Length: 173
Length: 120
Image 1 (tube, one colour):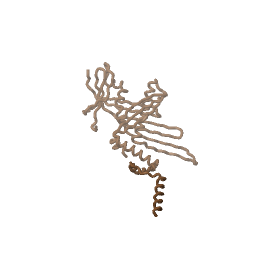
Image 2 (cartoon, chains in turn orange, yellow; image 1 turned 180 degrees about the vertical axis):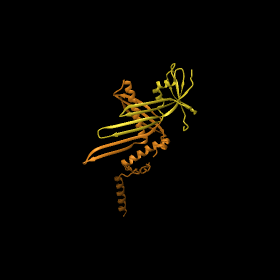
Image 3 (cartoon, chains in turn orange, yellow; image 1 turned 90 degrees about the vertical axis):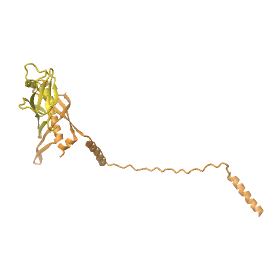
C-alpha cells in the first residue's frame, strides 16, 4: 500500500513538473474585465422633399413675420420715341416711360392685376385671342435707386419700403 | 436776403403708350387760400431767383427739379394692356395728387417746404 501511495505522489509531482506550474511570489493584480461598448448605428431620418419645402417655407415665413419692414423692388423699362428734337429729349422721355413702367409694376405687386381674357374658336381652330390686364392703385414713398441707359433702353430701379403692420392693414385681403 | 414765402400747388400727369412717353403735364399754380398747418422741409433748388423774375416763372423754369422734390408723393396709377394674336397695346397713366408747397428764397437757392398732413 505504501508503495502504491508513494508512486502516486511521485507521479503527481512529475506531472506537475511537466505541466510547468510554478507558484509565483508576487501575484499580479487581477485584471478588470473590459466591457466593449457596442456601436449603435442609428438610421438617418429620411426627409421627403415636400417636408423639406415646408420647413424652408416655415423659416421664410418666420423671417417675414419678424422683419418689421417689407421691401419691394422693381425694374422699369422705357424706350425713346423716334420723333424727338435732340438725344437729350429722347433720354428724358425714355426715363419718363421707364418710371411709369416701374410704378405700374409696383402697383401690380401691391394691389394685384385684373385679368380679362377672351378666346374665339372657329371650326376647331383658334380664331382670336384677346387678353386685357389692368392695374389700378395708389403708390406713395417709392423712390428711384438706380438708372441706366443702354442701346436706346432706359432702366430704372425703384424701391418701396413699407412697415409690415401698415402693409397688413392696407393689403391684407 | 430772404423773401416772404408764397404758397403754390403742384400736380403732375404722365401718359405712356407702348413704353413711350406720349404726354406729360405739369401744373404749377398759386394757391388761393393759405394752409395753417406745420411745414416740413422737402428739398432745395440750387438756382438763384433772377431779377425781374416772378416766383411762378422761377418754378416753371425749374419744374424738373421740382418734380424730383415730389418724387415720393402719392401717385395714382392706371395701367391698361391689351394683347391680341399679332399685336399688343399698353397704356400707363400716372397722376400725382395735388400738393401744396411754399418757396423761400435765399441768395443762392430756394427752399421748398410742404405741409404736414393731419394723419401723420
